[in-house]
Image 1 (cartoon, rainbow, N blue to C red):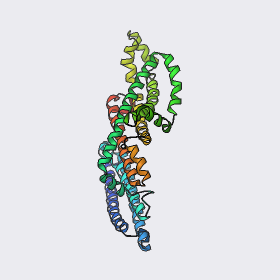
Image 2 (image 1 turned 90 degrees about the horizontal axis):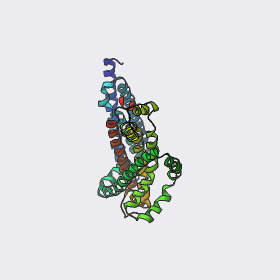
Image 3 (image 1 turned 30 degrees about the vertical axis):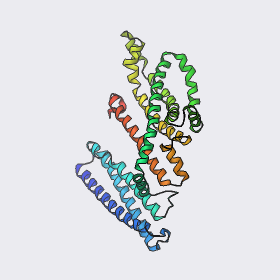
Image 4 (image 1 turned 120 degrees about the horizontal axis):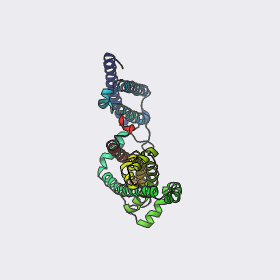
Length: 332
């Protein structure tokens, strides 16, 4: 365990490094903002280029030192974990955004190739109502498809566990269906269910069904023969054993399938919206704005989609933590 005196000294040095990095980042961004307002950014005088680049590298180096020290302090001070657990990813994320903004401005990168974070933020603020409408349209497809696909998969896993011939007949087709390309399924679903969200929900169901089925089937087999034999000695039948032992033991596998399916559902819904939608939806917005060369709008939509997926997985992690507190992976 690191002595308290050394820990406090390291923490002070960390805060100093981060403060200097933040000050340097502010100065650098102000200078680059003035540079970006010129009529021809490519004509920046040569003497200004090296100092700006040097300042950017200095800020990056100080942020790196601060991040390393935060992780070291985190490792040697377990009691402080709750207070600083978000500091390391925050420093890393802010540093990436700073480098992105600085380098795209300093090198005058065209917006159609890589827009700076400031342009993406402005687009997000300016088109916020449209993005909310797109988000709600996509959430409808994800919510229905994800819920139906996962529930049916869990029910099918229980049926396969009860009737082994279903497992032998159905699981071999799981690999076949899971390998079907979305770009081939989506147009067919649009022809079957129309251009609105039900066709996208159908794609989501196909995307999440078999990953959830495979994980749930493995979870139902996770209990040992000793545990099953113990319940049999108490006179427990199949359904009692299933409810009291096997379903609770399968929860870690079920949540693993739910988290895998969460990302697949988001991808499936967005890609399905490329193939016919009532001029609303995140997939439609990405497809249409790419054609108009509004790449900052595309990045803003990608940001919203990423936040949606992250929030979904975050909620699943919270639920998992409360439902599987007894599992070894949660005890720490």
